[in-house]
Amino acid sequence: MKAYLTYFKLKFITGLQYRAAALAGISTQFFFGFVYIMVYFAFYKSGSGTLPMDMSSLTSYIWLNQAFYALITHFYKDNEIYNMIKTGNISYELIRPKNIFYMWYFKILGQRYSNVLLRSIPIIVVTILLPEPYNLSLPISFNAFILSIISLIIGSLLIIALSTLYPIITLLTMNEKGVVNIFVVIADLLSGIIVPIPFFPPILRKISIFLPFQYISDLPFRIYVGNINIHDGLIGLGIQFIWLFIIILIGYKLMNYNLKRVVVQGG
Amino acid sequence: MKYYFKALALNLKSELEYRTSFIFSFISQIIIFFSYYFVILSLFTKFSNIKGFTLYEVLLCFSIVQFGYSFNEVFARGLDKFDNLIIQGGFDRLLLRPKNIIIQVLYNESDFVKTSRLFHALIILVVAITHLNIKWNIIKIICLLLMMLSAIIIFFSIFLLAASYCFITVQGLEVRNVFTDGGKHMAQYPIGIFSKGFIYFFTFIIPYAFVNYYPLLYILGKSNKTIYAFSPLLLFIYLIPCLIIFYLGVKRYGSVGS
Image (cartoon, rainbow over all chains, first blue to last red; front, top):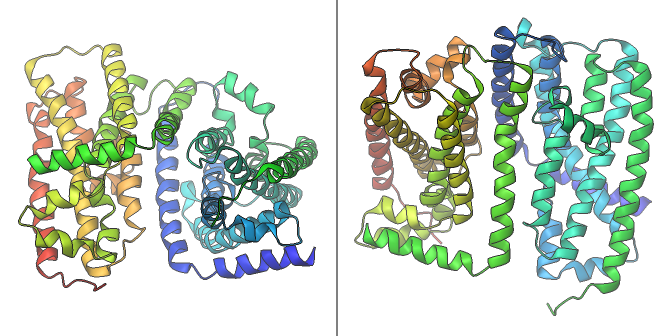
């Protein structure tokens, strides 16, 4: 365990060095946040019918998505791992007396946690201070706040399990762009980052119930704004745990399956 | 110009060498593009209009802007990746050749996978037009063509400005994504739906409004002012200072060594 934590620490500290990149990320996130919010404002003003979320919770939902974007998006590529696969340096990884799945898991964990730490805090602080309709509001209650934090942590473990799965699939297909890219886009769509899940067309909403993606960020953020109550939130938390277990199991098994038939071509 | 097309053909040939990779990327681009208008589609299942614009009106605007952007991604990729050219010293090599420097930069790289988006945008354009009840006349057709042309020019100008910036900073700044990617994202909605400050900025500083708003109003019959139909022509004027800035940058360019 200690070895894996060292991987985490190493990546975490390295990630903290990239402050200029974080600044650029923050400005993009702000811009996108404002555009999304204004689009929804325009819809709401001309709107009719029953709305699944009121405007102030929707605004908070959008800002939380933007603040934690670096953590929750599937569009994340650990170039180091992909390069290892391409160049054959993976053989060095294989001679280490540790489990390669957990090694990769903790590397990605460190990287993504440091990325999000640099980006989320400034965004959250500024958006809380923004004037009325544009601001990130405070959590609906103290209990909801605690529950949403716990659920976000499990959600982040879930997305990292998925992010570890992608290079493992690449080991199988030897093509990082193909299947994985298609998978990533669909996963991002279904996790509610682009459109909040309550706004999905009914069919898609039904499909997404049976998939793990809405348990990454949608659940914690909707608990935060009060769109999901504490009782349902606790049930969601249970489902999150189950998915986390399933994805890690799949990743672990697939990795072992791959390692039996991996061929390193010289190098 | 002959060299430009020849170089593009060569680029295409080299990309097609990796056939499976090309096909898979092409398919994944279709899905990525779908995720762009998925927002619009799913929000219109809950709402009937956005400040008076209906689904197909927004899709018309969306497809024109996406068309302009993807056109640049395919045919002016080198400009987008200009920082690489400077950092690796490849720009010095281009300067030695007795041909137009901008055209050389354009064909330095290309990304034909993005033709997927180009076709996709055109399909949506056609779908939107067939669903809209537009009384076509000659001015409206000219207006539509001008919109498509100006969409190409505005992104070209912005890419050019971002590239000129590389002369000063050497490194490409990620912040420019706000104006290219972010700008594209915003311009896929008619600009009138945004708040005042936004509209002013994107009318006078980066004139998206003349690409996707005023001419759109004319085509949809929301306004009768014929001048709106020809407002995309302003983009040609906008292009001039961008070109001048780029050439000024080339003039004071002193290589980065290597």
